[in-house]
Image: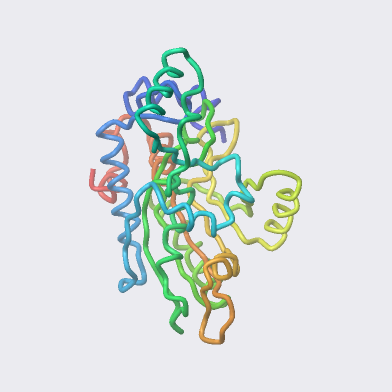
Length: 303
């Protein structure tokens, strides 16, 4: 069975012509229409209604986080090509004059900037770990989170956004608790997405680790089946991952000094949904005319 669109360019043209997205001068950066945002907000509410841990705190994160906390995640070591750093001007009047001179002459004016104390967030859960207690309670630490993240990647595919939102259900605890969290969410997530008329397939996946050392990390991640992606076919060119179930082992427990009751590094897991990608998948599956969508899907999203 073929996908709704032959190629990413075809899907991009369709959503732009329908006014759902408005292109900018940079690939991967779009303005969203009011209707698109209404559907996305409905999706967010629908995902939130699937929560099981009703006592888990719910947190909405900004698109930035402290640089020091970001560096503790080791993201720069694994994904330097995706990182977004925030630079600011802290100079004097004379230095400002030099900056303006470079700007007027078409030179590199950014050399007058320096790194700020914040960076763009690369994953929703990165903002969570530094706020957790050093000793995780016996019942584990759970959180329902949402926020904007940034990945420096782009192209003609409108699903590959540089700035987008993730909705996540996170658990930090023992290895058994973390694995149980991930594995219990996988059939639940599949049912949620299928209930919205999507047809995802679950695939063992890996993160886009960088460089030669990254290739070894990819092999290890796939062999251990740490990451599963929920993939839909929007175009014939490639599948699109709209959600993922992840077991992070003790990576963040070690880097953020989080321990369980037995003194061992805590393990983490999360079920993450890409809000913009899933919204685009809904338009690809049901058509660009929202009024013609199945009534049960529109009711679930409240739109």
